[in-house]
Image (tube, rainbow, N blue to C red; front, side, top):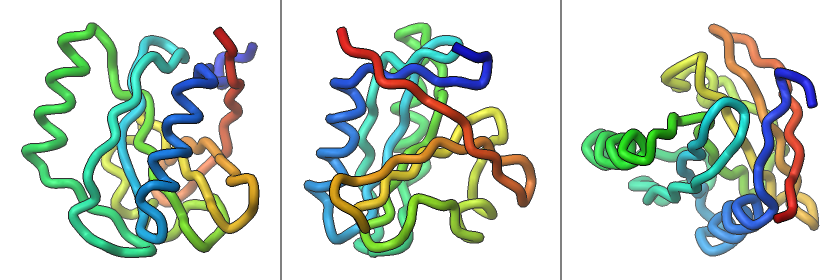
Length: 137
């Protein structure tokens, strides 16, 4: 495993994909937390905007979840969201509104069957695809 590769348990990945299906045709979103490059927790968040191409979560909701993550002695590793009808590539809106370049962006697209997930690192107005591996327990 390289330093750039994230490890996500298959069960958490499946829950993330299912959350996107449950919210279809709207974008779903949430946080992935853990330590170093290992995801340990999934935090689905309510998209306040019923939109097929945008998501928004209230600031107090995000702050409450971040406190819960810190209580677990974890850190936010990624913000995930879905693209119900488009490819799993960050839009200019996604990049412009990404809050922290230390936090990855994960996008699951439901344009194809099965859905396709990509993991990105955002640096300014640029993005680089990161690799992730699914871990079965």
